[in-house]
Length: 411
Image 1 (cartoon, rainbow, N blue to C red):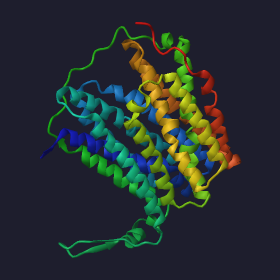
Image 2: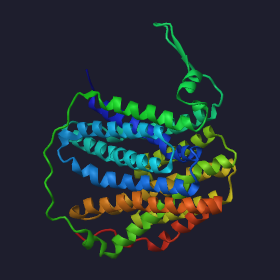
Image 3: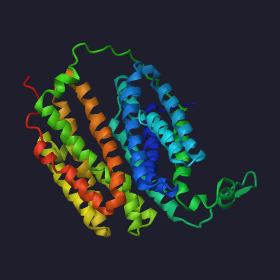
Image 4: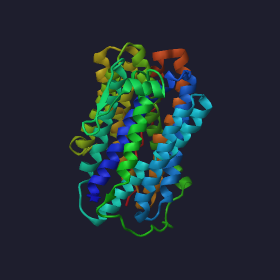
């Protein structure tokens, strides 16, 4: 039985970001629960980010024939599930390091390949990409909130009853089989992640009503070299600027949940806070055309820089709930506005520059910069605690002076 292709795509986004909504906010909590020191947590998360960067940059372009996209997505989902299950088999940092690399390497290309599939299908039939893609953001909100709630439900016994077969299994009994107190502690993160990635693979195994077709893309012989791009002042200023603004998120991504947990907040509250940040992100993405239609990339970067210095500075000052709400709403400024600025700058370039510039932007700003700062953050958090967020504010500050003045060549 075939399902509508847009449903298949939307389900893929939903299940991927449902899994990511478990992994991103709570994986540092799981690592801490496994007895990993903060400095090693930073290294493990940084290594995972580097693997994400490699996976997106190296594995994604290997699929050149659009008709092979669905099989590639299924294969990568299977590998992601196998490495997710791998976390069950050991808690030594070396084993976790190996599994983290494998999981991120194969999990990260799923979104760019899904976007490529969406582009292929868009040429075959008309659909609203935004209305399909938004299910990913909705899934992140649901899963980050639900994970927090489940982690907070210590001592709660769940049961599954079957009217057809007359049997029941309590989660307390399952705890005794897998490990004591599994569903009332940090272990819920791994259990829920395995469940979610399994759901992603099952969704991928469904057959879409319209299969993707297309020709293998030929190489662009007129593509500009990396050296030529980086020799232009406005380009390297742009890349340094966005890398600093995104890298400043490293303390928040790596230790935000642990920091708030130490301040006395429950896992459910932490989940809601992460969800609030994504809600703000969704609102700004949805209304970006109305809000920023006349803004230049330079001005958008200024706004993102101001939001970053204020957000990370406030996070270093206060853990009061009202402050955390403001901090999370500002995610739409520190992340979303920065990303919109990048898309505007890159979109203004010549056609033969866009692909390479997009690749460098993804590699540095969305991968490498955050990876390096995550490793640094791990060592700093052990010694500075919440003071690390002041460092993140200082990381974002130079972007104010580095904003590029020139956005495009004259045509």
